[in-house]
Length: 276
Image 1 (tube, rainbow, N blue to C red):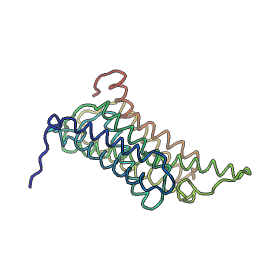
Image 2 (cartoon, rainbow, N blue to C red):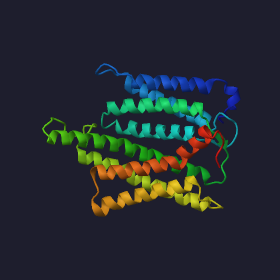
Image 3 (cartoon, rainbow, N blue to C red):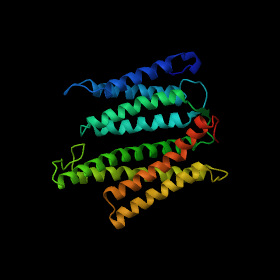
Image 4 (tube, rainbow, N blue to C red):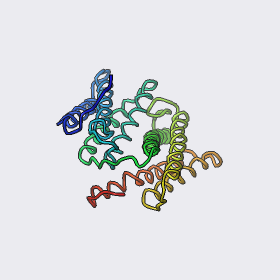
């Protein structure tokens, strides 16, 4: 049996309906619920699945009937947050993280609306390996995004620990209920994997680019890669920990965000034109 998808025009308002229902599901997941309520968790899963279908139909091109993916700061941001939500879904099977669930549900609703308001443009693949380069790049965004999320929890737990040392009662564990050392190891495990994926994406980009250009994407990507390399080297040989390490993580993530999402935001929204 061969499945075929109609062009996006024949789908009518289906993508808009999907987007609205996904936002509604995310809203239910983010809404404060009485203790023990079983509703938020399945609502988050429903929002995530609807979000996935929307990515496939609209951004991935399954519903357009034309080759190429829809690229732009909105679609990439939407896909990145969706991947971070997927990481959270796996993680929450082992550790309950209700506070994080609300933050991610709000983020999911926000990026669905952003991707609908700023859909980007359809860009055909320039080579056989171009889609892999793009997927690796977005995957590195998601891994570093998960690292940043855990780093903020780590910083919050360390602040509470300092309050306890100052005579104010505070828990010795992180917001996820795990020891701080374990939370720190998990945070930088995401950094390590993200760095490997980012390196592969950059190498693939170099191998598949016929004319090298020192544009904003190249410069910010390489700067981000250098910051993450320095962070991992500092942790390995200088024992960087705590806020010193998380500051490097935040700087590297910000540079990487500027490499594509930030620059495309400037071109698409502030300058209202397509970027190369």
